[in-house]
Length: 218
Ligand SMILES: Nc1ncnc2c1ncn2[C@@H]1O[C@H](COP(=O)(O)OP(=O)(O)OP(=O)(O)O)[C@@H](O)[C@H]1O
Image (cartoon, rainbow, N blue to C red; front, side):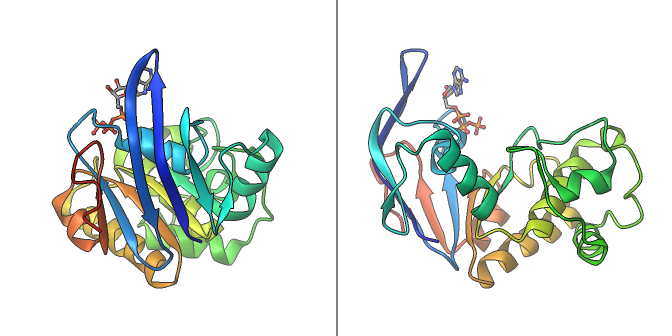
């Protein structure tokens, strides 16, 4: 799905965080949101995912203006089209790894029908196979990050919103995560990644510099 933000501005606590950002995220091309710490990458990602309302400007998805979607329309959008891998991972720490993968709990708390084969595949791809019955709260930071990615793989959503996916990972797991995300894009998904990681940025087909005069590198 094509996501287009047109001239969006957001203030938080009276302070401008985004000021006239415009960005296009196309299916099949992994898009990096880059910029200095505090430049607004996470805020922009949240706006594009309809997790945070904009004060000005508009967001179009496949040409439809979704900027002022109702709560129920946003929930349908999240349920039908999106997966999120956010900085707090959206993990239910009191639940098992398997439960966390098969629930889309981070955003809407809706159970999807459990599919054992897909569960196994999604855990295998992130190196968590065999850990399905462990409490998610017992995983390390990097493992929780990979669990959040397993959930996204399980759901196989049209649009993937990912915040700093490699921040807590060693070199091997970082490469694995980058390849998995690139594969989502190759399969025609829209993948939007906020990142500081140069290896992650190199794997992206397009880059958007947040909060800069040079807003359209791609
Ligand atoms: N909920 C909030 N309340 C107050 N200020 C906020 C909130 N969310 C974001 N901000 C402010 O907005 C600015 C941009 O934050 P954001 O997290 O989007 O930046 P970022 O580019 O993702 O940073 P980093 O690379 O450090 O993760 C920061 O100055 C931050 O303090």
